[in-house]
Every structure is written in structure tokens, then in C-alpha cells.
Length: 273
Image 1 (cartoon, rainbow, N blue to C red):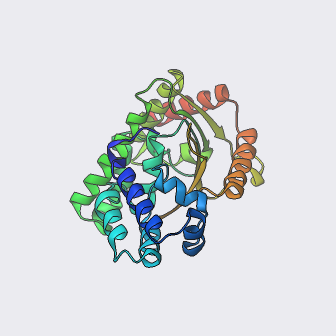
Image 2 (cartoon, helix red, strand yellow; image 1 turned 135 degrees about the vertical axis):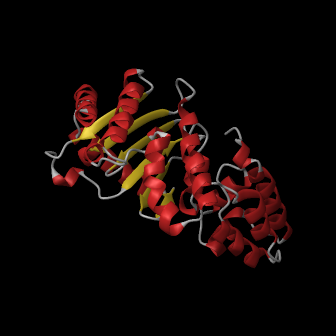
């Protein structure tokens, strides 16, 4: 993988982890067993393929006797993402993905959201949960994700939206109409592929939570699942395979891309009337 600005600390952390591990000495497998991950995962962190995680850095320090060094490195060099903490790891991987396949049960996927849609979603947080500066940082971080689509070919983005997404008028009818028109324009430009899972689809095809699958040129695939104020990044092959099967079932039950685009544009026009 090439390194984005947010990943510059990964190689330094990886090389320091390797140096400290070999000084003990422990193999990658031995260290992995002590901190409850695979030796392969340790190797991927040392090679800067996987993002170091704070809880794992703390366990590394405990096993290697490094007096909090790796924890401090993780906090100061790695965990400076403007995204919500539960999404930060997925955001770092998103910019490196070759393909992204996402299922959205209630809201437009983040990378496809317009700024006014984002602001409407963030309004309750601005009023009740977060300070205004943090809210603005989160808004800018989410809208900046649209830059993923600046490259005309990469990543390949395939989104399946439950029909509920089209019917929840975030920010009011006029705003939602503009959001759906933006989505339709991306589809018509052939930059993304979108399908709609209709209300008439079999219940077993639908999932209650948002999830995404990401593949990479030089690393194993991952799955990311998100609920309200929480998210989980998964890279174990068995779990990724389960999410892939779920996505395949959802995609098979969805409308065709052509029918989906027609529905999106029809609902957009209804909102504008």
C-alpha cells in the first residue's frame, strides 16, 4: 500500500514494534499468542499493512516491557484521526481500498453524502452531544471522504441501499431531493454502482446494520459493521466470508442498477414538487 498522510506513523510504529519484539526475543507468532491475535496480524502491523490499535499497543507494552512506549506512539502518531474513534481505523483503510461494497439500511453512505445532508445528520450532535468545533471537524472529515471518488477508476464502489434510505427525508424534502439527485448523477457518470433493496424483498435478505467490505491489492480483505455510536472492523477470514455472503444475498434481492436509478430519480423528483 502507498501511505496517505494519516498513515505516516505506521512504518515507524511497525519498525519499533519489530525491534522491541526481537530484543526480548519473541517470534511474531509467540507475541501474537500473548496478545490474542495471530502472528500474521503482528507481521502486518510490523510491515505497516495494518493500522496499530491502541488496546493492542497497550498489550504489546505489557508483554514486551516497553514502559508505555508503543501506547504513546499509537496515541501521538497514529490516533489523530478527525473521524469518530470507532470509524477511524476503517477510514484509514478506505483510502487504500481497491473495492468497497457497502450496504446501507437507513442512510446514504458517508462517501456519497452532500455537505448539507451531513450537516442535517450532525445537527442533533451539535445541539446535544458535542462541542461546535468537534462537530465542524467531523463534518469536514466526512465531506472530505468524497475525494475518494476523484480518481475515475479506483476504488470500485458498489452500494446497496435499502428503500428506506430514499424515504427518510433527512433535512426535509428539498434537501433530500438534492441529495438523491447528487447520487443519481454519480451513477449516471458511471463512477459508482448503486442498487436499491425494495420493501418487497424477502426479509432474510435485509440486514439491520450498515456494513462494508473492502479489498486491497496488497492486503487481505476486511469487513466493517456499524451501529449507532459504535463500529467494528473485522479481518478474520471466517467473519469476512460471512459478511460477503450476506452482501451477496442482499445484492441478489435488490433491483437491477437500471431500475434502481429510475427509482432514485423518481423519488428525487417527488421531493422537489
